[in-house]
Each structure stands twice: as C-alpha cells, then as structure tokens.
Image (cartoon, rainbow over all chains, first blue to last red; front, side, top):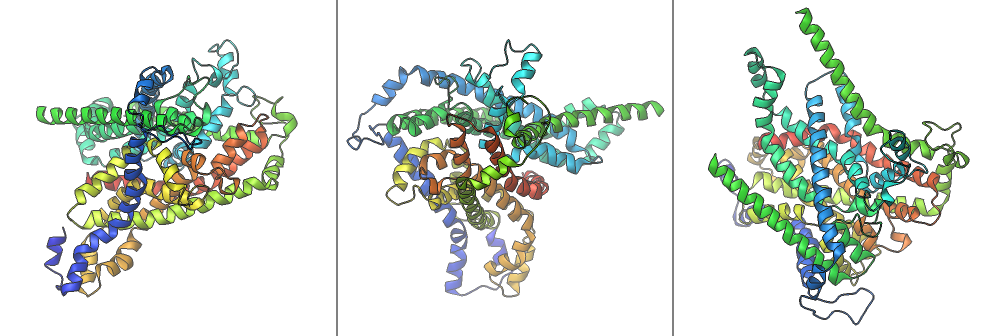
Length: 308
Length: 280
C-alpha cells in the first residue's frame, strides 16, 4: 500500500524518509506496548504461578510445587462441575442469543415506518452495563421485589414462587436468562450489518423469477450470511465461555459452587480464596482447552476449504 | 391483486407484533427497575408484583445522593470511563490508521497479537496483574484501572477504527501530501474530521466497557476512595439487610450515561460494522 503512494509524492530527504519508514510503528507502538505489558507479560507470569504456591496473605508462600495444583485439580469435584457448567452455559447462551438475534435482524432488515425508534429500543439491552444486567435480573427473579417467580408459579412452572438463584439445580439458568436478554442485540446488530450488505438486486431478481419468501431466505440470505454467522458464533462462543461477570454478580457461583463455570471459579479462587497459585492452575487448564477448541476450528476450516 | 395486498397487510401485522414482543422483553426489566426505584419504602414489600405502585416518591434517589459514598463512586467511575474512552480512542485511531494505510514488517504479528488477546480469558491475568500493580502503586488507584481498561479495549477499538479508515479514499490525504503536507498533518486535518462517526462509536464503546467492568475493579481496588460505581453497588447488594429502594435508584442512575452514549452512537455502530463487513 505504502509503495504505490510513494510514486506520486515528492521524495523527502534522508531523515524524513527514515521517519516515513518508522511512521506505522509510531502509530501502533503505544497500543502494542500497553497490550504487551498488561496481557502478554501477565499471561506468562500467570502460567508460572500455576506451578507455585502463591497465597496472597501468606508471605511464606511462593515456592515451586511442581504439578501439585494440577493433581489437586483432578480430584476437585467443584472444578469438574464447573467444567460441565461451562458447556451448558456457553451452548445455551450462544444458541439462544443467535436464534433470537437472527429473527430480530430479519425483522429489522427492510425499511418500515418507525424502524429507527424500534431499533434503538430493541438494541437497548446491549447498552446496559453487565453488572446491572446481573443485579437487575437478580431482583426480577427475587420473589420479594420481582414478578417472575410469581408469574412462573401462576403458570404452573414452579411449585412455589421461589428464587431459582438459591436452588442448586436451577441457579445457572438465572445468569443464562440474563445473558440471553443482554446478548441478543449483539447478534442482531452483527447479522443486520451483514444482511444490509447483500445487494438488493439479487433479491429483486429472485422475486421476479417467482421465488417465495422462504425460498429466497434459503437460497440467497443464508448463503450470504453463512461466513458472518460462522465467525460470529465461533468468536462469541469463546467470549461467552470466558465471561464470568453475570455469574459472579448473580450467584457468586453458588449455592455451594453449583453454578460455577470455570472462569468464575478462577475468579472466586483468586478473589475470595486468595489462592493465586491454584487459580492460575485452573486458568492454565482453561487456556489449554480454548487452544484445543481453536485448533479444532482451524482444522475444520481447513478441511472445509479443501472440500469446496 | 387484492388477495396479495391483504396477505401483505397480514404479514406486516405479524411483523409489528413480533417486534412488539421484542420491545416488551427489552424494556420490561428496565421498566421494573425504574418502578421499584420510585416505590416508597412501605409499599416495596406489600406491592410486590403490581405494575405500578399506589404512590410514587423520589425518596430513594434523595437517599442515594445524600449518602456520600455513591456520589464518590459515581465520580470515580466517570473519571475512569472518560479517561479510558479518550485514551483508547486516540491510541486505537493511530493503530487503526496504520493498519488501514501501511504495509510494514511485523504487521501480521501485531494484528495477530490483537486478535489473540481478544480471545484470551482475562481471568488468567487477574492474579498476576494484582501482584505486578501492587509495588507500582497501581492498586487502590484509578490510574491502575484506566491502564487496564485502555489496554483491554484497544484491540476491538483498533479494528473498529480501521474499518472506518478503510471506507475513506486514500486519494484524499495523497492529494494533501502532494501539496506538501506531511502525512500526519493530512491525517489530523483532512481524515480525522471524516471519521467523526467512527471516533464517536469508539468513544462510546470504550466508555461503556469501562463503565461496566467489575472483576478488575473488585480485585485491584479495595479502598472506598477508589471504588467504582459497579463495585459499590454490588457490595451494597450483599449486605445483610438489602435496601431495594436506594439500590434500584442507583441502578437507574448507573444507566443514564451509557444509555445517552448508546442512543447517540447506535446508528453509527451498524454503519461501522457494515463498512467492515463490506470490506470482508
């Protein structure tokens, strides 16, 4: 890109030419430096913690303990439970957000009177800060001030108007409901942007050829959306799996660690248990799992590209 | 002909009905938050599931504003979010411009670094950052949070800005450079004004992200002088006696800045993402 611009531009002398070569690095350096200092370096340190005994309040800690944390992990029922919950949490959130988001994007795709206002309203949940989403759904699910348990009871969905957040078997569904409410607009915005980049002429031509609404959706819209859907769903899966905020706010992983996902388990181990070594060991396992997931995806993409 | 008009009318009715459901689901939780916040204390428990209390009052808002802590937390959050948004936008605009206009050695690795950090579980760095920041005096400090939030927001903000720069023809700054301006001057005077929607979207996005962040704010800052609004509100909610009135009132107050920002930028956001999508 830079090469072809140089043709038209008067060539500056030595020091300015040096500056021109350095220019892109000057623009990117501050950001890259910050990211390296706050992500790259801490990740390396964090992985080293996984093999050390680091308790925040114990000045005697800090020695190397080898694989002890990982051995403990194998026998930690809460960890395995959190691993299973991570799958339930991630799949439920992503699938429901995607389905509701796709429907919403299709509803908003064509111009109609009032679209601007309606769009602003239905996208609003996405602007609500995560902690407030969690707190507010916590209140809605709380029979003292919230209507939801009473409604569920009236509809016969529950045998008593209880708070599902204090039920070990159902607590995880609270954060899932909150997450779907909050994340649906994200999918809708992304898919709407992709829908609007489909040339209108294609749809018009198909309509003239007598293709029905459903037929056009299947043979034009879906193939056009497929790359966006694939990328968004895959990235979103990683992001949702890594996001413990709603769970931390709504249940703190409780009651008795029953609604912990791996990410929230790491946070509570570090924040409440102050056991940085063990927390880092769990985090290392999470990173490994995500790397395996990403590698599988890349292999799958490679295979699909070859097949086509 | 008549049949198809009728059918079309029916479809539009369905269309609006579906959107009405979406609007109801989107608005209801916020409506309820507001409702509880204006319900007087004596009606909060008895009035449980009523859609609107028999009497309303602003007493909870008065309580929140009079109880000094909340104003302090609010101020802390405003400072952290505004500075984060400003710094992130400047740094992301610079990096996004470089991604859009230059090919240079190492670009692949820099883009890769930004992509990878986007996918990393941030919980893994909480403990190390806590131990790194302590000796530097960056725990119990707003500066520490600003540094963290800026770093975490830069990757997405950079890609967002890049997509806006990609939408602006290169000829514009080339023309200015032929006239003798440096590239940097051309960027500031000609390109920057054209990316105002992009800058607005990036500002809004990073402000919202910083305003909402809770995990690092909980971990790094334990003194009340550096507590941010979300953490203050959350600690309020875990007390033995939960005071729903003032809490919901604070919740409504926490919504105001982000909603204003969001309503201003949501149009540009779809635009920006479209620009990115078209570029593919």
